[in-house]
Length: 414
Ligand SMILES: Cc1ncc(COP(=O)(O)O)c(C=O)c1O
Image (tube, rainbow, N blue to C red; front, side):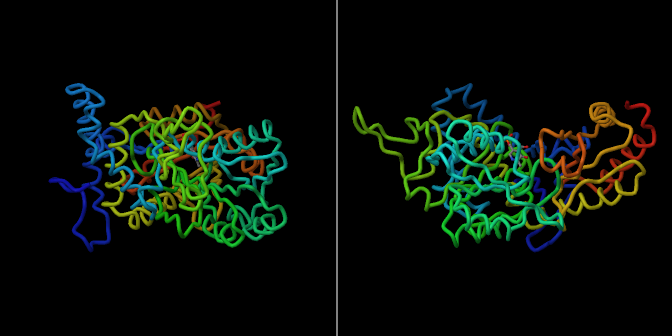
């Protein structure tokens, strides 16, 4: 979002103007925010747009405010569509990535014996949802093996399972919550399209960090939150629904008066667009904030973001790897900006508290977040540091320095 004190360099300039982008991000004055995989820092225009909308609601009334801001609300769909290469009618607003995911899952009429084919690195809540479907409907969950080179799921093994098992659904998480792994979602999608299989992608950690194009991925559903690398507000997310799925008449199990028309005492008709996956009530300030955050990311440039952000993470990983007692845990050839490691002699909470004390925002992952991955790595916890493009090289060095200092005094943290 360009405004008078623009945070961007002139068009054609390849580098991001990091000082200007930081000046546009009030949180940078207070903390070293390396928890963008949890929730990114809001940029000023996003914050301003939401506060303005709340003010308007207070002055004229909530319904009247959303009517008055219909254009800005509508831009949520257009902005997300621009971000992921779809049409606005393929986008549904959701309260979170998980909300989007379960709405998509609920639209699939699973029957006993149906197979969900997924990966060992799919997100914890997705795995629990599959288990719940198994408990209720008697479906089967199949996890494709990982590639021995550590690059995530073995696509050939997955494709062989697609042909042998004809799954009702193929589900893959692009970047998991618990490591910097980047899974080959487009390669998986290629096989899904060839075999005409329904394909659901969790892009929660990759949206806002990498270019995402739903046609290139070949997915039927794609889910994400707006609060992480997209730097939108909390309580927001979206669901992409392909034309194929809309035309085939898939609808969420609990469809409301916004998603469907009540056409007679005994009948209803889902609306034609992905709005059939939405409910009537919205947090409009957050919807507008998400639209502004998405426009902001597009104006900064997803391409330069996708170069700078993982580069900062690489710089951090390289320094952490030199620290005695620190074990960097990320795998794959080009990991994303989720840096995970454990530290000998420390328990997770005291380590995080010591980081908090230094005003470094971080996050912890535990074995239950990643039953397969953490079992393979034989770890019970990991610290996760996730920089974003507005973080600096100096911050990376300071964070690595803090980890080195703590790792050298493990007795303080037992
Ligand atoms: C890969 C992945 N998928 C899904 C989610 C869930 O997102 P939400 O909390 O918005 O439901 C997360 C959250 O960390 C995630 O990392």
